[in-house]
Each structure stands twice: as C-alpha cells, then as structure tokens.
Image (cartoon, rainbow, N blue to C red):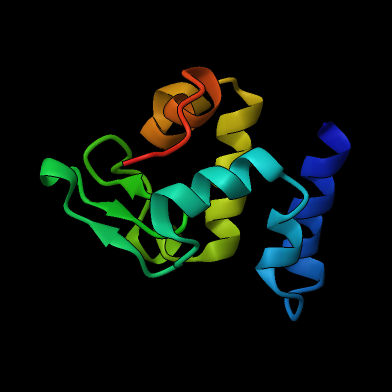
Length: 110
C-alpha cells in the first residue's frame, strides 16, 4: 500500500500532464466513493447543512478548515487527501457514501 501512495504522490509532481483519473483508478474503493460523493466532478459543491463539501472528495470546511478551497477543488490534492484518509482507516467516518456502500452493503448512496 505504501508503494501505491508514494507512486501517486510522486506522480503528482513529476507527471502533471497525466489525467488524474488514471491514478484514481488505482484505488477502486476511493474511485467508487468519489463517484458517489461528487460524480467525479472536481468542481462539485454541496452545502451539506452548512458543512460546505467541496471537490472530488467533498472535503468539508466545517470539519477540515485547514484545507483551502484551492486545495479542495484540486483533483490531485483530493486524491492524495482521500488516500491518506483510507490509509488511516477513516473512510467510513469521513464519507457517508463509503459507509453505505462498503460497510452497510447498501446498493445506493443518497
């Protein structure tokens, strides 16, 4: 797993001309989560009862004020941030859609 993280992070700076979707494909659960959360739209915005979820990863201002709008709307940052969430074992806590799809085994995420 560490190899994948290093590869993704290294590629962000070395190979910026590659599409971010290529690297997101390396993390199927993350890709499925982002698809459910933002429809893979790097510019996605959701008011979310004032939490203000932003970008691919739907990073909220309320719970993550340390993440700027520029970072949240950057797909490369969102992927790296999301991988970090997964590696730390916090995906079910961070994303409702992840919890519904992969923990509760529901077919849809609303």
